[in-house]
Length: 605
Image (tube, rainbow, N blue to C red; front, side, top):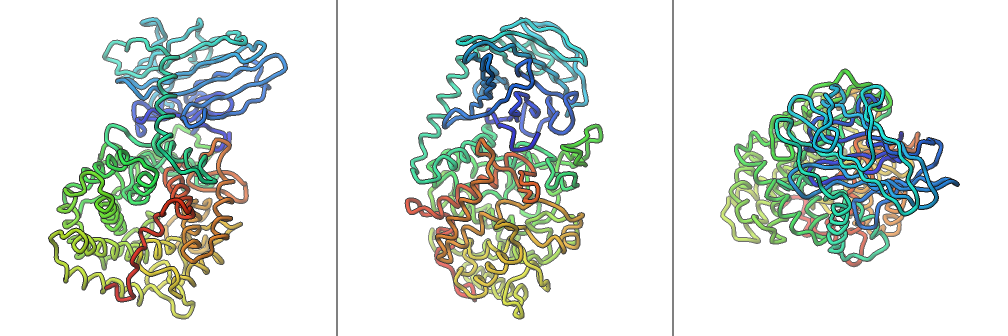
């Protein structure tokens, strides 16, 4: 099944992917980054899935969300009858539960339910027994209980099944609940009452967004997706719901994105704050402060949802991979890399929080001073960069620009908020970094900035230069860089990260990937700053067409296959959509304007 044929449900602690065939093929419990109990997405049905569909598998289906909610409906329609499977997760209570309610719409359909629980990413078949009014599955520390309103039975290949007729006006509910195996099974919950509560919660949450422009529906769906990727107990935002969905079908660029990246901090803050979600923005800042506490030299690029630091990367050999794309990775070794740009991202996020009066911004200053000291001592060192290369470290231009951002936001904090700091020293270093970049990252022959010092290659991350205020978009060096990226890295109007011809030399991996979608949203923002509003709007409309039928976006897009690739749904892509809509809006002052406000001279002073 294609990635865009999946719906997404969640409970603010974990999530599931539901195929348009009515099968839940991905579910990690009890957290986003826990081992999967349904892992068909990366293998086959014997690696775990939960199917509910008509007995006649030829009956077509479609999916939709209830408006302004994360309640998914899979509708099956035939001449004999039609029914829908309503899926959601209970965001309240101690235990994680999936609620599935089959509703008869007209006529009658014979429905089939098959539950295959496989723990530890599809590797372990649990012991199943009848218990507490349901079917309990246990293995090691984990247990799940299925409670059903129809009789269930054992099926071949270690599965639990049920067959039932659903008529117009009738409904049948199933509830699957996770709990520690050493404890009694949790009490039953009323699935229909839970469904009502979930619907009320999401509708009230979505109603806080007041923008009423052309792309409101797309922005609301993106905001709901971002909220659903937030780990509510801590406020951390995971980058995606999945691991190892390939950046190229059959390729090796398969990574685990179920963690929180510091790099996403500033733009995520803009998405929430400018959409009216100050509570989520405040929780994200609190998470950032906790995660970054300690020595700045030990600051990581990414953390677990609760701020965990140890995320060792290993491969799962028992799975075949999505469309035979291997390896399947759990954990992410990028957590151990030195990525200079994250210091600038953190400084920018905390400066934005202070500017927008987000809670806890006052206690951030000691952390920021510590970060600035580290940047002072290390800004001239090579690093792995924003693309988390597995090749040699380099002096990446984007990393140096973000080091400049760290000093610039420190200076602004002192000047704007009268905070204590080494103002003259920081101003001098800011100017030095600025001059260093303009000298060593600029190719005078081509008249453009380049990927790293001494390189002649382009990189889409250079689009960040005007977006963070390093130089204005109208500066000839910047405008020529934007135009060159659009000319040389564009495929059907979408922007590649960098040239595939140079990719292996840079990132140490075989060439071959889709198009990283946030880069195309950066181009929209840069076109807006260049005053090319009509072109920017058309690019945005074209990007909107890449969304799945449910309005979801993955990490990348494969223009040759015309399909989404990479982990799904991807927070950074949805952040790009929200912010680009705001950048082009006349009703909201977007982040492209706010971040680059007061662009400084070439000296950076």
